[in-house]
Image (tube, rainbow, N blue to C red):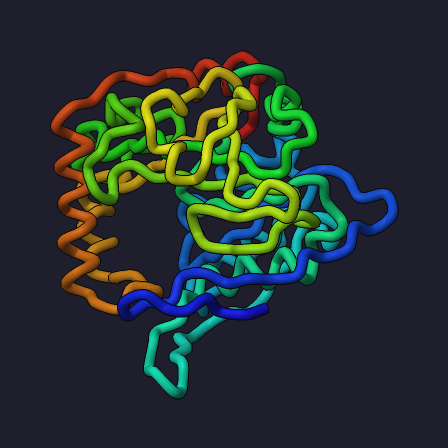
Length: 304
């Protein structure tokens, strides 16, 4: 793999040679970075098991709580791989900070991608909610053989909770930003589900593929360039919705700001960005109970 020429102070893209498809590849895997997520990781795993995720590749960034123990208690060796993954890296010649998340995604594709039809790259505060069908794969059927799907964030903030409420995260937070395609910086973005055996360029929020370059599809199969996907016409949540529980309660938001983000080069920049995003979400919210409806319809056990 090769870093593209950095722009600014944070190198955020890698080019790779796609892995070869292995015989019998099928299903969908998730690759995610975690650190000290014991409070909510069980719910995230149980939900995604219920919507058909075949394997979880968890890159553990030095957790000191029970995150890994919880994961091992929930999942078997056939469905869980934990990879220790800590530290920052800089280019020796330029001192450019290399984006650790991008390295994780490239590593997952190159080492494990040949076994799967799809790989999803989301964080543990993000949930893949089928709107049509029972599983993520069923929701993706309308995309067909196209290898690159972009799902816009549906951003949930505090929903008025000052402290963590009792019960599951996904049942307690129902107020999200009304416009997932807002033009406000850092509020609108995408996460992707891709055919790993077609990926040629990797970044956190966008990919390129061998046959289609930077074309990406929404959940309804409508194709745009990755810049064009920011147009209102790209928006769809008819088949699959990505819920991003960005802050949880106000108390947890403060804890998040105190911790900072290992992959952000500036703690002050990170704090300002997060507070700006929260303000933008909460300026214009709508009630969204589609997650609750789905969980109740299929009697999903979230473990809390």
